[in-house]
Length: 254
Image 1 (cartoon, helix red, strand yellow):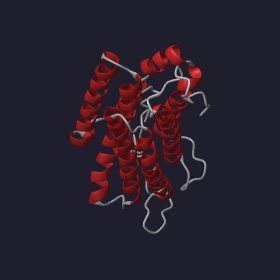
Image 2: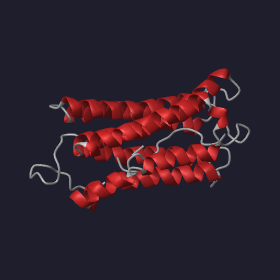
Image 3: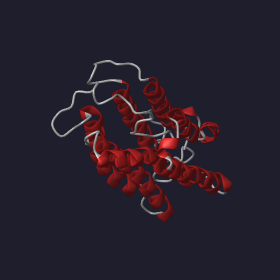
Image 4: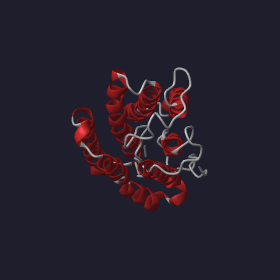
């Protein structure tokens, strides 16, 4: 998303496979996949608006602000690309191009989700070492999905997203041991939301309302939930305070 695997969460907005065929979906004028497109376009607008208070909360430290901007960009970029991709004609060239960007943007969101968590809460190797590994994997994934898209099987793409996101399990455990479960629970719930949504997407199950709300639409909801949980956690730490500081207010539930 997600860091923790929470962190990373896998973020998404794309098809791990071809998704429901257009013959199965009921379009509305201007939107090939209405729910998938509108949900992520509205999500992009929402999180773009939330960027201002998030970055403002981190004011006072250049590194902190930069990491928050990276996270905000990753979130809005993923949702924007996903939303536009799903409104395009499935038989058009533009949709084929956006599909590659849609998949690649997942890696951007995952890596950007790790960034503020490790910049703000960790030091030394635990900060830069982890971020170096995560961004190296993200660049590799972006290259594969952009250039060798047709050679990467859908299940392998899903495993890359989930595996990269759940690298954050180590981050989550470290934060749990240092600050307690209540402090890091948002990234755990976010990681679970991303993961459950991804698994249901690859299984293409369930189909709640045929042609309207199927597994891919559930996946889009899971992405928004996962990002919402993670955004809540990042906002919580954006000021650089921790539960060990008396003025911090990090004990609230998600």
